[in-house]
Image 1: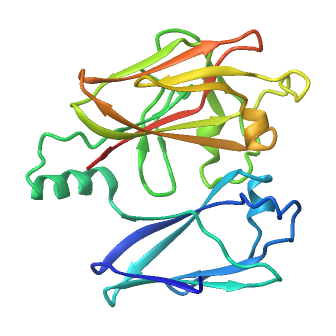
Image 2 (image 1 turned 90 degrees about the horizontal axis):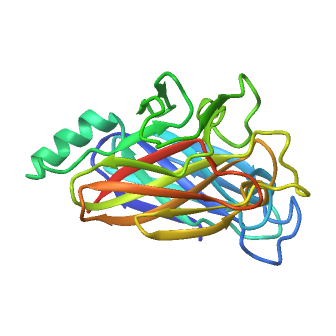
Image 3 (image 1 turned 120 degrees about the vertical axis):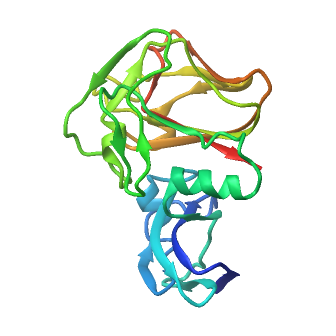
Length: 263
């Protein structure tokens, strides 16, 4: 493609572009290079394979933009011999929770939850680059927490989320009104004791949806690289339940839980 355009009410937004290199013909850095321009904000020579850490690794690029002409434009230009690719486009009005509440109320949806964000292992609340507040660690049944300090976390503009973790737990629960939600789990392997030869493998279940044999190190491409898993769920019992199950290869760990309502 060369462009994507959509009519958008004037205002301020965050535009998240979702990428993952999934073509087996791309096996090394530099084999797919292209440029992206979001509302006149450019990224030149984007190399998804290199920045994400390899094949089938997800990455997100965020752009704060201001719409003044009622239209959002995204341009794509090849920089090398291959062509541009993209997996998803997400447009979020800035203001988050308060604005979400007011928008839902204006639609007659006062009963819907604005969602929740939890920074696993953190003893204080955090604020991400979009201005969203992540509450301190809560909702876990057991386990322990750890703070790794100011370590470098790759491929993210929110490294503080991945510097703390909750590990060794068996579940997380939180009350939510019945409805549809996106549950996003944030992982990052930050313990030097985990290697390819001695991995951490565990199972996760979100509202009954299983994720078996999760190996963060393998899927993220290495230490200190975030991995994000998304589940689309329906709540019918008034709570979201996440179960963690250890295997013979170490205990579960998690860095963040993000839940947002879906229509």
